[in-house]
Length: 416
Ligand SMILES: *Cc1c(COP(=O)(O)O)cnc(C)c1O
Image (cartoon, rainbow, N blue to C red; front, top):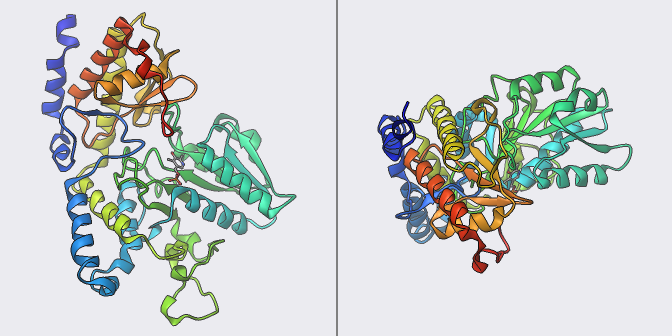
């Protein structure tokens, strides 16, 4: 194929015309001229979430006050939102609950998993896991005291790391740094064959690909509400527990709203049925109602289409980088094969921080992870193929002209 035809903006426009998810972009508030590749850190606002938040503030809270708990079913939101998320992660409606942050849910489920495997004292955690996962696992084993211990292991070496002392193995479905997608079915089976429980962190996969917790018999999972689920900054997270484990799960944070009958105000704690017991205190209704509405952006979206588009966006991104940015100091930092990649592409550059700042200055927003990785999240709900083209063209220009050398692109904010 001649270059002009195989690599051109008009070819990307053709991809957009054939995209079965093209319409879904209209559900989002995307600022004009912005190419947004950071939905894996903070998903954008949807029109529906905005309207819902305003209504909850003005009417449900503003006018109806305390009656909102019953009249607007606020009290049911953790389970209702959980049921919406369940479809996106291949679980049953009653296997997911929305509450707390990913970090807090992780702690609750790690502790519950250790409790479910009496006599086993080891927690295994992916060595290059998102740090909060490692901190929490370490915090738990330190609290439990010896002989409990934490073992950090590479996902490729689990056969060595997991033995008959392992209570639970905590893995990230998609690696936040390099976008690597782990084989959930295969790893879950190998871990369970050794009698341990699996706890998957879906922060970088829920809402971006066709997660299949039920099909793979996963025991437990947690995930994030503000990344690919677009619930807004600090949105509530979620927790999943396989149905047949639920009634044996003991949370280390048995708060009153996880009680079977909170308004009996009984001093004896009796856990609620199922995953509802993982709720600890009062749900943040403004945030949870916003997440609830944001999830409607997935209405009618086929998860197979979602995954296919995500892979295609990444494949095009990387092909364009190879074709247009050769010799400009970039190195691939994610799997080239779409089947092994989550919904982000990562490139390494010696001055990655400055290059990303220069891109952001041109309204192409990705992010940077030390020491030298530029990340581009590819959310299939609103990212267009032409956005990918425009991003790579900006990147090429910045590298070719050395625009990143500008002093203002060296300053670092508190949040990167
Ligand atoms: C984003 C992310 C979290 C975030 O946890 P919070 O409690 O919401 O701050 C946790 N784990 C992973 C793997 C993540 O990517």
